Image (cartoon, rainbow over all chains, first blue to last red):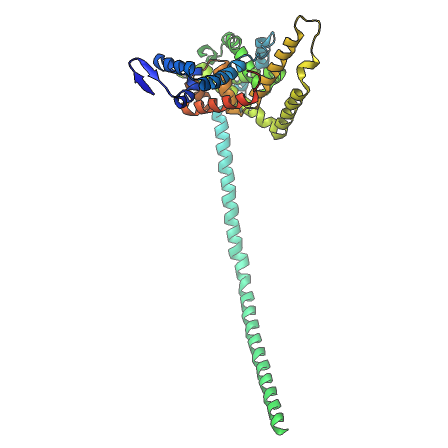
Length: 169
Length: 183
């Protein structure tokens, strides 16, 4: 944009960037003058502007139905049918918050108690039962080792026997 | 509105009468069903009555009112769900393909072809506006039909002024494509 005295001159790019502001009447007098002068002189921008402004004019022609007769009365009637919250103390915010907080405290206490009980159960009931299991496992491992030693010795013995028989042959 | 906050029913009635046209028509342009639009508009006013205590006099009333309108439309679209929206689009498409105006052409009227063309144009604009994304549609309706400024639209949509400019620009480009041949 170039300012010459009170007049503004715009190029095509600047004019096209101002389409929305021109439509919504947001350009000041000098800018509007520059915009309109460019549109008058440039057929390409003029065609684009006509399309852009034209669609906005067309949208503005849309006619939506008016509210039907008695709309306000019907709204007020619906207001009467609405449950009156003020008469029910349970709906008052103070009560609601109180009840919600109470329930939250009870739930937290229940969860805490349940967790504590579970921890105690694991400690007192499950843990001692593990000891015999560990013991049995250790014994089994030892047995297996012993078995392994026996089998290995037998193999060794057999080999030796075989070797001996080979040497005899 | 201050009287409404104090529970003045007469003030509430005046408020409904003053804003009913704008609210009903804005919802109609988003929903496309006059009966449903009235029902939702009544819910908007009931919400105004219920939330009157939370209204801050520093905010412009219409901005606050149209925030409720916009949220009501969003909730309605969410309620209808994806399937509902698709069937609505399909219906609009079918109406356009069949040429809805032709069915109601009255050959006895002085200029039936003009009436048919006008009806077709109305249906086309309505469909084009309804197809816009929620925020773009609200921006277009508030700017074009209710004369809201960019700042007011930004308050309704909880976004910045440049975001409103961008929404309007994209909406206008889309409308230009969809209404090709009608301007």
